[in-house]
Image (cartoon, rainbow, N blue to C red; front, side):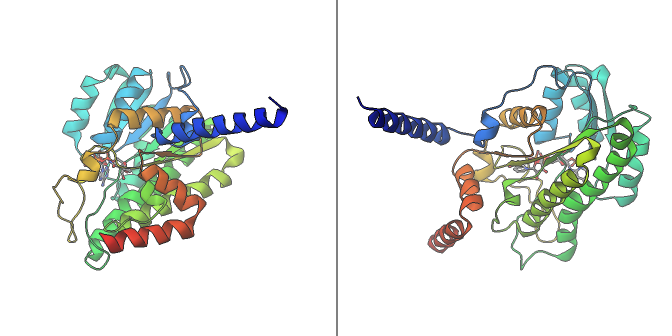
Length: 304
Ligand SMILES: NC(=O)c1ccc[n+]([C@@H]2O[C@H](COP(=O)([O-])OP(=O)(O)OC[C@H]3O[C@@H](n4cnc5c(N)ncnc54)[C@H](OP(=O)(O)O)[C@@H]3O)[C@@H](O)[C@H]2O)c1
């Protein structure tokens, strides 16, 4: 065999390997190359918003097993207290009521949390609410609620936590559970997409502005994950959607999503995409070839 044949064979083998790996991927390939750093979370204080359900609840379970100290936040205190009792280390966790859409509560929250723990190493901005209606149907108050919870309240809480804790303690880590809806638009999710696109952009700015303050920012963009997000989404007038959604029901298991998030955080990744295909492929396509992506999306919409 001459040298050229060897090089071509190696390239073909590598391409086939990468193609198979990509077909089987449930996250972007950078994230899949990483593994959980041992003891990364041990004794770190982690504040998780939206801890009463779904991804936030599972993150708390896994973080507690990893030895983290936890602040669990949401509005449903009964669910938070039940979760707290079931954690691997309930003695290292506290429940703290927080409505992210209430500006005054968000402003007070970091100071109040100082009485629970004297530091916050990691803030996980996970609280979120979705919507199920078209742009033309949604009422203003419902649109504002989505933006308030998913973007504005979350951003103000982040500012408070950075100023109260992270700047004083010489660093910290902000993790944002955004969405692939923050990478490309999806019908009936107008303000949800707007808030998640906004969150990604805003937190990219925070990362750059606080580069010299030792503050790491990780944007997490999951595709469909099997949680109650569809039941908890809002109809045009703000009432609970209350229905399951086949896309979400067929989504990734919440345990796997939380596991991948913790791997991303422990490796200090800037942005990760967590999803099965076709949503993972769509995310790659939307980033690498926006024109082709929008062309295909329009073709698909016209046919369905
Ligand atoms: N599941 C998916 O397919 C998917 C995909 C991409 C991104 N995400 C994102 O993942 C995050 C978690 O969603 P999930 O799927 O786990 O949904 P979920 O089960 O509905 O959980 C949402 C969490 O947010 C909290 N929350 C809602 N409104 C709040 C408010 N005003 N103040 C404080 N907390 C509030 C809820 O707690 P209370 O109601 O007790 O306050 C709950 O703990 C969200 O940001 C969502 O956008 C989910």
